[in-house]
Length: 117
Image (tube, rainbow, N blue to C red; front, side):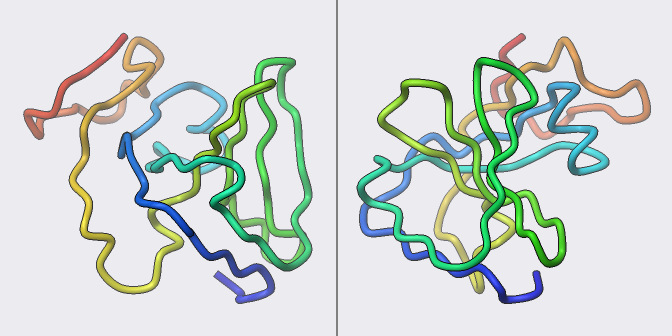
C-alpha cells in the first residue's frame, strides 16, 4: 500500500483462493485473497516483518503501513502473496474459498466458487 515493499513474481501463480480463517479475518478485517508460487520464484525487497501467529505459518507484513502481504507455511516450498497487492489486473480467477467453517457471521459466500471447510 505504501510502496515500501515491492515484490516480483518469477513464475506463474496458482491456487487463487480466499481464506476465511479467524487469523486472516483479524489481519484483514474480512478475508484474505492470495495465490501461490515457489519460494524461489518470489523476489521481495523492503522492510518485511515476519509474524508467526501459530507454529503452522508465518505472515509477511509491511513494517511501514501494516499491509499483510505474504503467508508462508512452516516447511513449505511455496509461498502465498496477496492478490490485492498486485498493481493492475492479475489475470487470475478464484479457485476456492478456504477455512469457510471459520468465516464471519456478517457475510455470505455466494459467488459459486468451491468452498472448503
